[in-house]
Image (cartoon, rainbow, N blue to C red; front, side):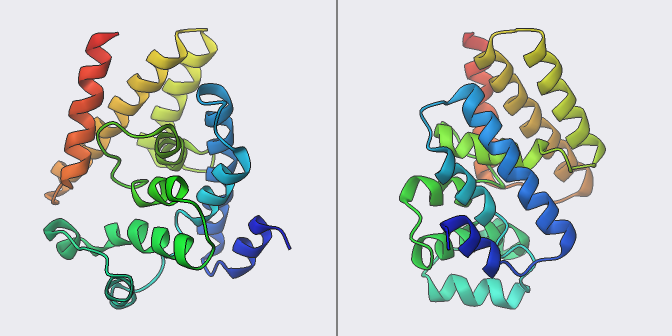
Length: 200
């Protein structure tokens, strides 16, 4: 059994979540081929398949896994525990499936992003946002922005960074409108890539 099949056979999520997961795997490989051809596409696929592995676990199970794997929980995560799935999925990817550190880091930061992300982290983060089955209007709008500008033969790096900045802006606006806490990594990511954009 291949690594991908081994992961797929162990995933216990809803049909909707599985469809999204498969969409992320396809999108992440396309992003890697377009922007970071040095990445191992097989490993990109495995990280994508693992990114929401624990997404549908209960809050109690998330905290249990954090204790089991000695995962530090921030104040924001304690109050919004749905953020924990990225950390617990990364732990399982490492301990149970033997994924390398860079793949696990991409899973770990796929929800919040962070300043100065690695290429691997970028493709999993962005694929999660713009894969073809995401039908939330903000995701659709960002996907259309990315594809339209990429098809215009614009500078690929500029398109990528612009899309990242827009993703963080959209996330922050959504959280602020809801009156939710904002993870510190998302703020740091937005500021980092906004500065990068100004340097282009």
